[in-house]
Image (cartoon, rainbow, N blue to C red; front, side, top):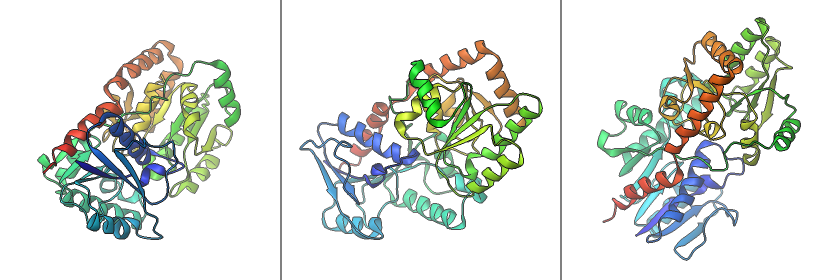
Length: 368
């Protein structure tokens, strides 16, 4: 069988969640499956080291100035269709094989529409509904996403399969003190800090985290927070909030942190925080646990599925609870160590190999 994959999102230089999902799942599929043929579609040439270039894998680059998916990829589907098309991190082209499979990562825009621009909200609504209805099968990152897809009427229950993502095995505890000190120096961090990873946008609920830090400062418990993430929509309000709360010396905006630096940055932190309003999966929680770092995250959407009993779960709307939880992790070494060990056990439930096995079963079930 010839399996075509839209790999265009996997080549991003500054990859975030969905781009990493695309890259690592495709790699795992190519490593696992030695019987089917693969054709990967790109809108610009991928770096040579990104993918396996075995004879059974064709890398097809199709440059096009605008509307690559719905014009150029559609033309390719019309003239040289694969047996099955898989779109892991984008939208199905208008012209596509009847046997197409897509991944839907989240429907957070339905729950928190004001955390997106009007244009982004319209596009997410259109593309998600179109994907779910046009595809033969839908993969959801979590039970929470599957529930959203079925409850809003986008897809029938038996059309959606839950396949949990894995995590990059480069995320592992870093214990080399010299390396940890080097990372702290590179990003201007003190010896003791906590960390949050995610794009600066309203859905990440960083405003509540800043309010919790301000509350701790008023109690005489100042905390240094490192925020690693690109600037997204309305990021300016976070900078203004930091100044208004008098946290300029305590909050460190690091910008986009390259993947090789993240394991040491997270390993060196006393705690990892993700107070998001909504996550389709919450990959950073998994990465933090893999680094042996205690995790505090929201108790909503998919995050309880990812964290299990290995994190402190808090309401994203309860600033006081967030502040108290952070204090407990910082003050109670024994409890923090227990969370760290639970996290290392929890991540063994997730792997890209397992995700690839389940995804391949779904793709091969489309065989004529």
